[in-house]
Length: 349
Image 1 (cartoon, rainbow, N blue to C red):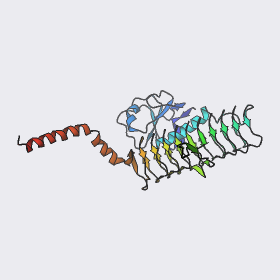
Image 2: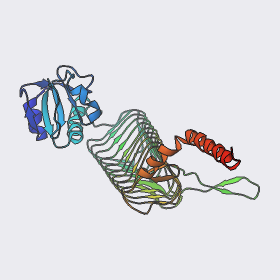
Image 3: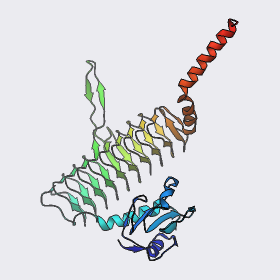
Image 4: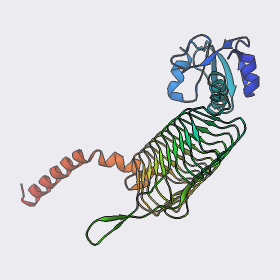
């Protein structure tokens, strides 16, 4: 990937400051970049690196005002993160093209009645069971399991070790990372008189709409009845668990180790930080933002709130409360000293 600063500025519709002939071959972190690399600055915490970086080209926002000399050629853009994502996507296509040739590996076990679209590759030791259909331009990596009557749309990437259980539906442009499990039984057991537990069969499925991405080792359970649904544009990080009959609204995102219990309805554009726990049978309003390690134990009805804590409360209230309770030992000492002083006053000392 050899591009000049002038070419990059044109591609990104950016403003060029510096040498238009500066050439780059690859992306790099701003603190590690060398000559021939391009880097980016979108967080003020890293501004000091803008003055020391060896990168040939640096992506910055229009609002960036350097306080020292910057040696790199600058390309100013409206949105640094989106511009970087665009460039990395193009770079990834060059260095890691869309998988193997469009063919079915000889040692893949694909049932005779499976429908496979054009320009779709199926890797070695992958199993695709009867009644399933895979769309066009998909890349099914080695050692994937696709159960009976699964539907996979167009332009999907299914990475090694993914398991998609029977009757599940995957939309267009979806990405499932290594060892994700789609459609395992939910955690449903009925207590019996003898204190044992009777398994509740899960006869529903999982539906992933278009442009959904699921991280490595994430688990999305099938519904007992009906569907567990991730709406269009949902992004799920590694090691996330979504239980049976959950519905996640459009463009919501969940960071690593989030757990969502059964039958909860999560709205659109919700953001759940890492290790957030959400109890079952709740409703989470659109635009809710939850800080990492928080616990949601009741429904959130007001949209666009920022929450923190366990149980979670308003983010700003939590931060103010934290200032108090982190100082509780000192406050306790002061209260005890005041109690002793009052006692002495009462005793006339």
